[in-house]
Length: 398
Ligand SMILES: Cc1ncc(COP(=O)(O)O)c(C=O)c1O
Image 1: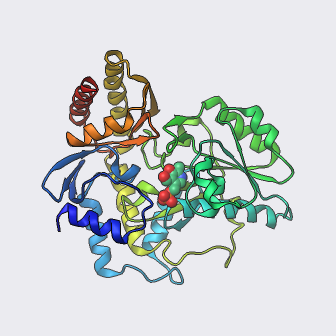
Image 2: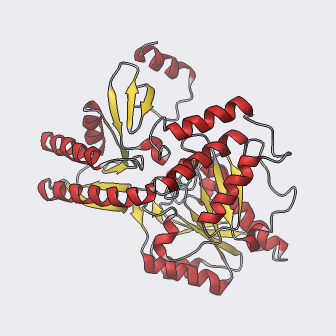
Image 3: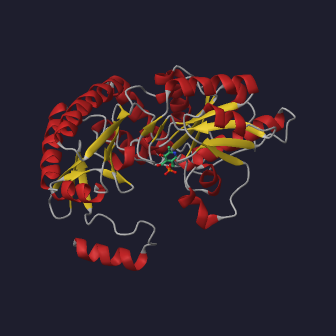
């Protein structure tokens, strides 16, 4: 089928939640590159929105999925699952969590976190503590509870009335957070680097003060590591940069390299609140997803990909700073490791993205003026140099 036929079929039969998509259909990928049905090669600097951390068709991931699919894809969590137990153990060993529960997506992992925070206080005999404070411009998912948690009106408005119990405060404003705490508050939930709003890292002093405040007030701190986790920022988890430990954190995106999975990770004292029957999932923690997750995590540790993310992140910053000195249109470069936002002084993100696409580069954009880069963690200095040259030419042509 050619691209035109696919586009026609899509416009007739698929629900139009994505609007006009980039006009390309990929057939296969290898490493950092994707190849389209019309035979063109694209360098993927968006990595399926922070999912393809090992790049495309990484042999370790392909082998894990292949061999698991031939044995057992699904059996339900009514039975013991070796790769589920193993992946949970590995995540506990590399993080501050003591226990893990697997879901199928980021939003679902966050739903689990919200439920866990509420039930934790219910079981402590405090049923009126249900409120969660999140940050303005945050993004926590598309289910009804996570839409209510998300601090962006555009995602909420069409679905009013929203699920009650959420308040949103300005980022890096401790006073606002203190003022929002009420008798009903049970937790604070935040991304440490807000991704969907254009890559905005929180201040370290603020995050440390929030941790202290949560301890003083007896509130749980939930960190959404769905985009920042799994090595992207140069450390396995972004909370490591901030010198704090959350009570609960959530993972998804890169955890199984593209096989749908989410993880709810918590300290034992909190995790104990979930007792048999309190939470569940048909697909969550299935053998296929967990085998994929194990392959991703083992490869990440064996190849020290967080260290590569840190090093390549610095290379990116150096190259982008050179470009910002040359092109006035770049007003700010934000980010940590391989989570990068290029702020443009004019509303030209779509034009830059389109021109890069025409030249074989895939990047993301946020709003009208931010270019977002979330490349696979296997990226090399040569890829970055080639991209800097391409971006230089595009900016020159504008
Ligand atoms: C920080 C954060 N939380 C939650 C989500 C929702 O994840 P999913 O799309 O897998 O439900 C996303 C997705 O972009 C995200 O970036």
